[in-house]
Length: 239
Length: 89
Image (cartoon, rainbow over all chains, first blue to last red; front, side, top):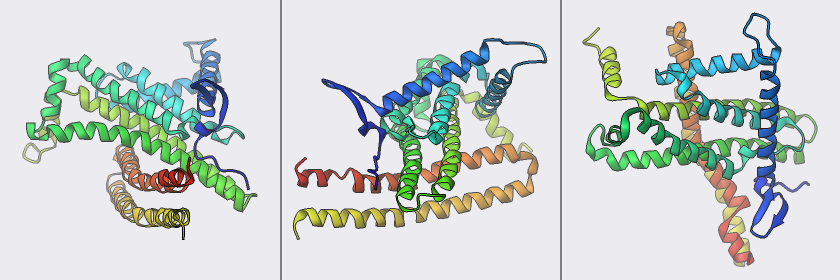
């Protein structure tokens, strides 16, 4: 029976003193390299006319989809958040997608990677919020609806970061673990079904990670007037 | 029974119990959310995009509770801190 590794961190290739090169880092580099090569290939011969290369078509479709989603969620100009959210989505999506390649361990199946991604979101949300409505305006958001909610708002900020990291890690890790267990029990066709399910779950999780990051950013950058207008628009006495 | 056996037994039993109990709540919640979303879709097919996106996000958030239980049971089996202490790691 093959040894089941719970996390790609445990596969260590090199070790120099306190620095070690684990499978997580190597496959993160692989994902980054694949992304860069794909994008370079797609943007090498850009055309603005009707005829374009297939790669350009694919990326234009992706970007259009992401922009429309961000616009619907935040209700603001999507180009401001597209680089951040889009990079998160592309990285997670590709690293979950490459799971079907034999020998590839998705770096998102390690708690280190997902914690790093969640920390990026954790620090990006206040940065976007301060850039949009100023330091005082952003900090006032913690005192809403009443100052009594201040500790709960802070706890919510921390716990949603934890949830973001553990959700992605748990989903991807459980997918590869179930396949590993099935390989030991019924090695022929059953793992394929679970691999297909894992592919679907991986894409859904990438989508959800990006959507949640957008929702958090949208909540931090939205000022009072918008929410009041939204509330009056949905309240029954106006209609 | 020495402590190694006890810790091994309890860890494995509790990993199963964690998954069993911890998946009941999220299962009921996801069922409710999906059935309500289907009802909303049947009433307002035009709002399909919004309903579907909200459904996916809420399903993921509900599901993360079950995922916490799964992570804890995996920690109990694969990375048990008490186990390493008894073994002498």
